[in-house]
Image (cartoon, rainbow, N blue to C red):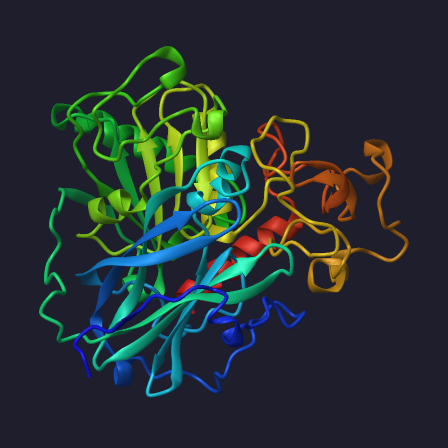
Length: 439
């Protein structure tokens, strides 16, 4: 067998490996039976898989760029199989035909494929994913969710031999980092908070900014009650210049992550196009989630499930924005707003239940929060705050759509920045994700 076998095939060729996005109970169908013994299949380290996504509105391909052996595997060593089924992508790892690890994620590139621009040009973007470092050769399959069906179809697959001489044995760049630890990384949610737009002589400001922003998380439920379930790592990744790029103002900065406003021509949307830049910055610390703090005062940010949350440090709304964006990146929560401008076209299709836990189009409401709606609450629920404020219901207007898409609460942090906190449905989703990492 070759040390590293690449089988880069199209989704059409691999359609026989199609798996449903959900069994209707929040789980993903697979051949998995029973628990996976971490010690049998994996070493204590993690393996970073750097990918390149390419395509347009009508087709996508994904290519392997390289493999990197990194620091300690910090996610659960008990819960190795993703039962949420969240994300526009999903990957499964097989050893001797046995499913030993799986996880879902989203990419900024996939968001871009839903924009008008993707209908006229093709582009590419970097993305990184992680697996526990295998002891023996394993087979990785990466799936993409097809929007027209809501189902996952295999996009690429290849073998990984852990003895391959081309696996880089140590991080190519390890930035200084400080930490705030509650316990064993494998029993905690480890968040790596990465500096963007801070020069080397400005790291005191980064540490102060990052800690201030994180304190906002722990002032809200369910984070407040579960503070001891988190480890924090502050990565001092230095940029050549302070600040970030703002094309609308003609401002271009040389920064370590190349973050930029005006993503998809939306003024407030601040993102990192090449996710692997963040992955490399955090290579030296344990992490289950990534947060980027940008040294900037302009309003904005972004959050991509399983990839990263990003926010600015010095805007008057920075704290609440980052809480919202982390809801996307960590717990897979959808935007509940429907009046703000977005670049997406037909992001949620009729008849295809959204995978996010906090919105529904009632195609498969039983898989969402139906069991949390009290008897006597009308479905849909009238937008009458005097009667239904504080009630779990089904309120029309969510997911960038004024009609046909519904949220569980009259007001929530996933709807606007002025809500007092997360609604019960979002709190449950966050708690479920915390549990998956720590139990």
